[in-house]
Image (cartoon, rainbow, N blue to C red; front, side):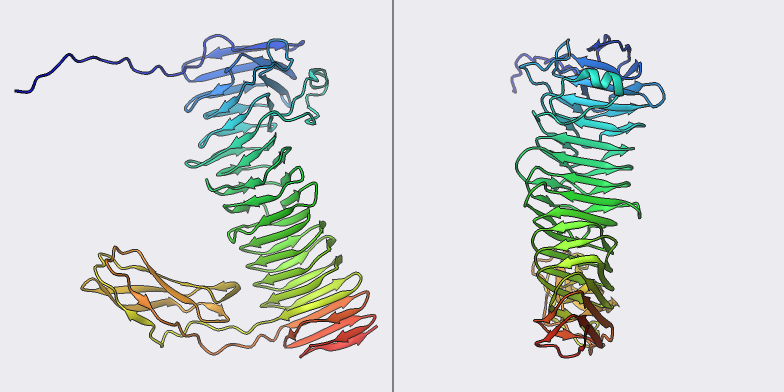
Length: 486
């Protein structure tokens, strides 16, 4: 017989609830009232009101809402960790937003610790939301102007988003901190990211993509700017600006990126984009590398003090009084045009021929065993920028791959791709041999390179037709160029 001892019933953990009384003190001449229910707190305040929050008071839990009701075009300053007088205290305090923050005006959240915006949070401030860990005791200025200088010493980091549901921000959002980490975030308006401390500024971390509907302005304090997931700009007139404030590198090499106009000031820029790339006024202290699925062009002056390497799935146009002090290399499926100030030293200028996968040549070497569903077949490598990969479906017989049917032979191949089988639950995976491609189609586009100084051809120009213009011409290895000395 099973003996049963006394059963103890443990109390359920208490859930943090929104307090019934105001967890803040109003300083200065402003006014604010607090009305709370179980999950919603309403703060009705005068324009330019300054609230200094109790320790752990600025904490919006999951499923909770802080709603700021402000006059039209009004603003409110929330000071976290500044005591009842608004002066910085020795005890750091964090501002936490895991739920919903709404406002009819502009909201500043100023913390002397960290600011954490959790995955799935919803931010909607009509005048914009500013998150800052920069020490700022000048409440007088805010009381007069409704804004902050945002120039103080940073005391903590700002983390926005993470794995899980995306953070949604309607309107403009700005973040200033020792470290600033926006990931898995969608902002309908402008986004400002300003990191004051050391270490890489990591945009769009592993948690998910960064989507911006307005302009994107990113500034680091003499540290690299890097990314993991894609950055997507949804407004065709938006500008993405990157400044390392020092000789540091910018690496935005995720092939899923979709920028509109880009400006950069850095030691180097490594940029990838799934569509067109437009470079605005930029100064690159070293090399520039751009890989674009579509075209590459300039709409401002671009100064490159190192090598420029441009790989495009469409035309390349590099002009607007731009300068390349190193070697100019370009690969394109369309025309390549450059009109540069100063000397022009060309490297390899390539208008490659391309082909498609040849579906009539078998490449299945072994069908594998134990498949419970048809595996996915993908073709990797061999493509020009902007090329379209081939696609195919597989058929099974007795748990083995016995047939391959192409749904698209792709385009833009310069070499044979590799076929890879994945999924399907096999005990032994199918294998593939070399994939054949069709005869290449010549690229008869035009190369037109002009400089205001000497033009030196150090590489090979392969094109249907090519023209080089400069004050003096030195064609060392050109195979298809007309030279016009000014």
